[in-house]
Every structure is written in structure tokens, then in C-alpha cells.
Length: 373
Length: 148
Image (cartoon, rainbow over all chains, first blue to last red; front, top):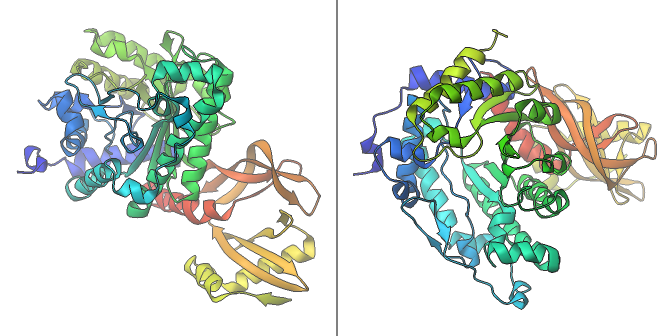
């Protein structure tokens, strides 16, 4: 039995048709219905369908079907995604371990001698085809094409370019190297970046295009100063997207600046590549959600923006608080020039309380309906 | 003007829904007006022809024009959003250094930004071939689908 037999079909002519028009609206200025809600559902979709976090990551086709199915319950996005933060590292020698309560994690660094960093080479397209990441994504999107074609957006994940590169030597060592051995630290990230670009090209070769998801997770103001974030993350992200475009990937981009970007948000605008279809999301400014009015002020001339509700609130049994935070974010960002989406500050937690997801959608209906403000 | 255009270039131009005559028209206008950019070895020029902004990528030597490529896009070029760094390109018309930047493009009632080469002084923008033929071509198709 295939995973598709576990799920009823989505309501295509009702829910999905409307959600698809809504999803398109901020990108093409054809306002429909209301502001969209994207709580970045990943393993929460599996949990809501009775599976486990481990199931979500070990069985990508099951995981993405859960996302496609459960999105209808909360009237979320009409498209599917499935990912974790360390694509492409296995081809570079990292071993990933699946966990019961977490996404796959590295079992440890693969490079202990700095001299070995100089020998690192990006993985070629030919070798990526023989690895595990491309076959996994091909399998995933072939499954979606066959079973959830209405939700298909082929995605290539660069994800956390700086953080993934750091896994080769371990995060603590990498952070130290950014001060003591910056050339080596750059080499690590660059190797991962060029490998990811080859991966994006393979996705575009097969599907005709490939949305890009790329972020700055490790490189945030709790760890690094703005200058380091610019050098080790923002410039790498710009290069990644530029090269992906040159090789046929894109044009859609989701930029995810995770964690605290208190002041570092300022280094991204001039370093990133902005396309006709991009969304920028910033998680936090200090301890609080990144303010939607600041996001709008700084970035509305180049991108659709995504506001945040703190993920901690999503597991707090207080839907009214989620509703209030959603309202604040919507009121501050809903009139952004190139569109607004209401999100959570990162992936919504696996055990997100359903009432809190409903609170976000309710707030979007109450304060995000086009034509009512 | 004497033109050198390989069969492969003709095929590429036609596969993009353009005619070789369109490209010649762009080149002739650019040569007459100096409205073109150069990196020292070749030129890029653009001209609005019907619904397309048509580009010619060409070189000139010994009185002959070699067409390297031709491409176009339907999105209309609007204002420059920002410029961030110098490039190897120069705008022949005013001698200004062309910069890397982003430009607003409008299509089917929506205006969105895209990476571009820009001259802030004149307000002119150009899209490079990889962008027009790949990224923007897919974007135009998505705009058409999503506006439907």
C-alpha cells in the first residue's frame, strides 16, 4: 500500500481552488480573500495525522502528504514542502542520525585536521546523482507529481549555508575559525554552497524550475556580529541565488533569517538577490518576534514579507494570545507594498496546539481580509 | 551592416520567439544612437519591439557585426530599485560605469524587482541573458498562470 492510500483527496474545487488564488495574490497584486497564513508546518503535519516526528523525516513521501492533507484543516497554503536543515551534507561526508523528537542531526564532525579543509571539493552534479540527497528529492517530488500534483512546487534547499558548512568541523570549532582561521571557515561554507548550487541545477534540470529556500540560521546576532553575518552568510546567500538563477533554478525564493537578527537584518538587503517571486521572513529581533512594521519599512520595496508569531506561543495553551500576536503582526504588515504573509517565527513546533493554528487563521480572517482596511 | 550569425545562434533566437531581423533592428538602433553597454569585448543593446524588450548581444570587428545571442522579455522595465556595486560594463552613450542592481519590472498589472545591470545616472536598466531567458521567462509564465 502506498502512502497515498492513507489520505482522502483534498477538496480541489472548494478549499484548494480558493487557497491557490489566495496564495498567488500577494505575488501578482491580484488580491483575493485574505492574507495567507504559513506556520511553516513540517513534522506537526505528521503528528496531526497520527504519525511521529521520526516518521516525518524518515519517510519523506508520507511527510509531504501529511503537509498537503493537513493544510486544508487550517486553511493554509495550497502547496507542499518537506525539508530539514542539513541537505547535501551527506555527500560531503557527514552522517545523519534520525531521532524520535528531532529532525536528522549530524553524528559529529568529519574534519579534525585543518589541513584537510584545503582538500575539500564541491560535489559535482554527476556525484550528487549517485548520492542520497538528489535521489531523495527526486523521489519526493515524483511522488507529489503523481499523488498531489495540485500542491507541486519543486524546491531546492540550500537552507542554512553557513550552518551546514560548519557541520563538517563542528559548530564550536567553526565559530572559533571565523576569528582565527577565516579562510578555512570560508572554504567550508563555500564548498557547501557550490555543492548546493549543483543540487539546485539538478532539480531545475528535471522539473524545469526549482524554488529556492535559503536562510541564515547559525549566522544570527546571538552568535555573530553583523560583519561576520554579512561575510559568512548574507554574501554567500546572494552568491547562491545568483548562481542558481544562472543555472535555471528559481525564480521563487524563500529567504528565512532564523533566530535573532536584531541588527544584522541591515546587511541582507544589498547582498541578497531579489526576484519577482520572493518572500523574506525574519524570526526574531532580540527575544521578541521581528516587528512586522520594521520588516515592511526595510524590505517592502523588494519582496513579499512574512511576519512572525513566536513559536513558543504555539505550544502554549492560550489561543487568545496567539490571536492577539497575529493581530499585531497583521495590522503592522498587511499593507506591505509587495504583499504580506502571516507566519510563525520558525517551523511551528511538532506538538503545536491545533487551537493556536486556528487562532492564526481566525486573526487573518478578522484583520487580513482584503478590502476591509 | 555585414552580419555574422551562426546557425546555432539563429536557432536560439528563434526558439525564444524572436526573429533575426528583430535582433538586427536592435543593433542598428544601438549603433546609430550609441545606446548600448560594453564590457570592452562585446555589446548589449535593447529595444522595445511590440510586447517584447529585445536584446542583442554582439561584437564588432573589421566592420562586421557578429551576433553572439538574442533574447527578450515581456516584463516592462520600470525604475531602478537599488544599485550595489560596479561591474565591468560601461554605458557607451554617457560613459558611465554600469552597476549591479535591481530594477522594477511590471507585467500583467503587477510590479516586482529583479536583478539587473543599471546606470543610475540615466535611469537605464538591462537584464542579462541568463536572467531573461531563464528566471524571467519562468516568472512571466507563473504570472500568467497566477493572474488567471
